[in-house]
Amino acid sequence: MAEQKNYRGKQDWKIHKVIKFGIQRKIVANMTTESWKEIPHAACGIEPDVTDFWEIFQRVRKQPGWEGITINTLLLYVMTKGLIACPAMNAHINFKPWSVNGTVEEFDEVHISMPMMLPQGDMMTINIHNCESKSLADLRDYVNDVRRRMENTRLEEAMYEAAITNTMRLLKRLRINKAVGRLLGSKIGQGKIKLLKGKAKKDYYAIPKSERLHKLDIEQGTIVVSNLGSLMRTSTPATPYLIEIIPPHVAAIALGAINEKPGLIKNETGESVVAPRKFLNVNVCIDHRACDFGDFVPFFACVDEIFKNPGQIVDWLTKPANAE
Image 1 (cartoon, rainbow, N blue to C red):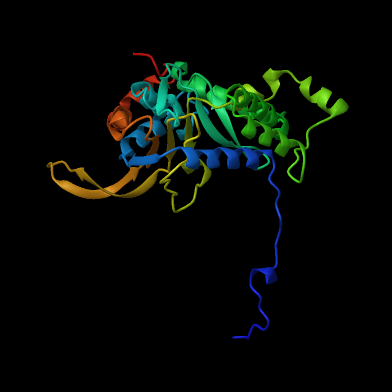
Image 2 (cartoon, one colour):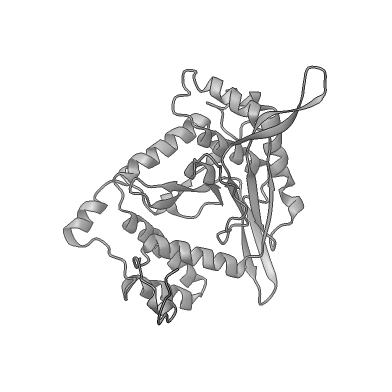
């Protein structure tokens, strides 16, 4: 082994590349810092057997009308059903530590913030509005329309528009130092955000909102559902264990990839035998200020019941999630 002479530590390391924070990284860094600084996270998960669920989906997706329905769309619908059954998770918290007073607002509508990959490889969290009133076909069409509008969207403009709206809310709540810091960070220094100007700006904002993404598409929803399985399709499925809760949300959901491994089933004679089965990792983080583990039992019970009785999915193509 060659001897290293006059090694002085990190100052001798060769830097491969320096990457400045763009607006997307700024927003993520700010939100996750605030999340871990303010929220006492508690996590719990289940790993249901989804073999029958998967097999029924593979059959029905070949039927007319099911074109373009993916397993991700189907899982989004399942999560919506779970949130309808568990309003305590579909909520926002307002807590004042100095007075130890707080409130939790539970919502009837389910607006799911879902990270999506942009064509250029960047991530953007999209608000899928009113999932509770959407069928599988509606969710498919909504996500497809979002992807279509992404093609006409400049990430920096859309995210800056949403960030400014959020900053104005901070000012209204008298969180002046934080609001001013955000504004300065976006306007000066090495982290200055490069926005469109002049004719380029005029032309961009002349594009109808129906043809591009804007602040309402990326504003915070009622909860985040992150499908890690859709992002990491490898031979060794990724398993999420912990996900940040973005204030003022009280919960966040992380889904892993569907994983095949040995499981126990009953054979024709009623004996337990080992057989190849498919499993899905479903993890939930809660804000322990707002709720306890018992509060999200209805969510897991609903999701588990769906996977144990998957025949119901044949009716979901045109049936809203909140339909009886």
